Length: 181
Image (cartoon, rainbow, N blue to C red; front, top):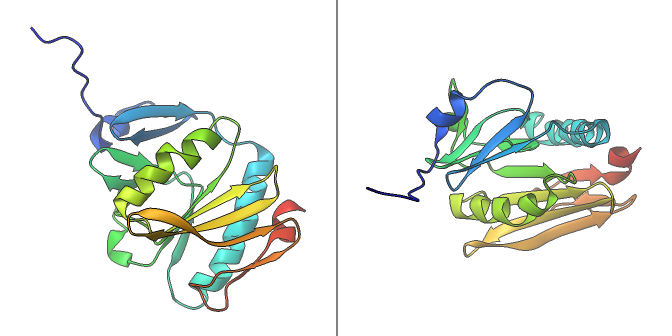
């Protein structure tokens, strides 16, 4: 008789769960459930998404998506990033984004901030997500991380009313004042 053996969850498990207005993610096989984001979170997300679309989609460099959209990083990692940029069209399937996006953006909320900056950050790095951006509405800060040697390093940051210029995306400018207005 086996006791205490915990089975890791995967996409099929997630797909069978109720559609009840909660956000569900699986990280390293463990289920995390959170409420939907607040209006100020969605406002910042929408405004950042527009700026990313103007850069990536207008130049034909990739496609920008927003939550909710299942993103399958591996058999036991299914996430719902706030915004993601996909540069490999082959990773867009009928059911989800399958594989690491080029950029994942998480907008910190009280219920997710610790997980976003620890566990999810590690899972994104392990999956090979090249760029992980963290938006902190309260601090009015955008931090762009770049995957190097299996871990993230800071590629660019901006705060308050600054304009972020990302060194890996020539010509990309993100106006932070637009996010907070």
